[in-house]
Length: 397
Image (cartoon, rainbow, N blue to C red; front, top):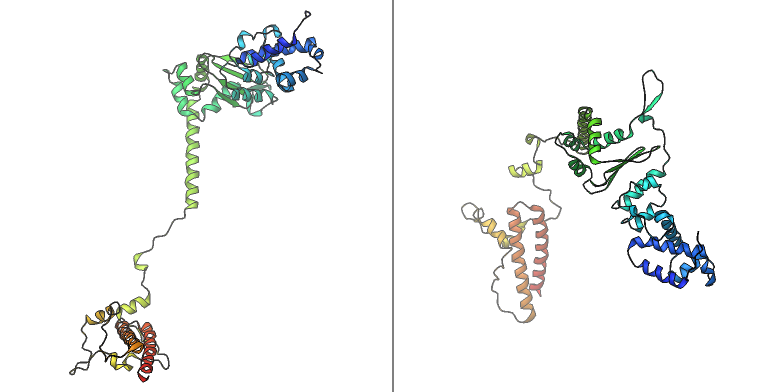
């Protein structure tokens, strides 16, 4: 390497300018940092190392400094220069940072518009150690030697087993590479992983990339992928369609069985089995036995002054059929107050209130008797008795 004479202040100014410009200039930043490190000019300015200088002058931590220098070494022209290699222009610092640990052949199959997420998925695939899978091994008759199944064919079979409608459209002779790309990769970039095989789908320009453990990456155009799908899967389409049909039928049967268990069948109840409560039937037929009387309990007949007048001929009440209902309605209405000789003061007002209470209570008792609600009528009679006693007490005064 040629001897360099570097002005630290000038290099610092240039780095700051490049940090604020487009992403491709981080290669230049890494180049200048490597020069400062190689010449040791940071020590002349009193800094202990390149990281001390970068943190105090550029606000870059040690991780960022190392990443800038590594990017310059991997992606610059000749591995030590201020310019980014032509093949990596347009990638951006995030993608190139993700690709730092990838080999040259793996980096070559990554397109500039490949999202960082897909690059990370591919890196995770590369980190795994290849493992021999018995499911991908069969034996040739008579040879006794295991033969490894075509990884791409196995990946395509697994993928299209869940996409039978798509496969049917692709196997049609009118399908084109553009239709295939639109069907399999509508978002622009899509990864498919199956065991030790990896397929990265990109746009029409970049095609697809296939990678398998133990083998270098393989670039395919969409037209080549369409030919592989037809050659590998067309002979097996009928069998795959039948398996998919059986799988759906099994899932449907399991779903129906689960619904049957969770929703037990309800037995219909015959209308002939529904019976009215015996008490209701007896009440409707008029076969209700009189309720037992409480010792000392008084009947409404014990108060003739509140009973309706009887007919001289029959001795029965002169109330018509409509009058019981009218008697019950008197509870809701304000009863007429009988005129009495005028009394003075609070005593006259109190007697008026008590007469009103007696009249209302008597009417309510009569209505309850006509409705055969004897229990409530008894309670009201007891209340009426209390009112009568109060009335007698007032008269005596």
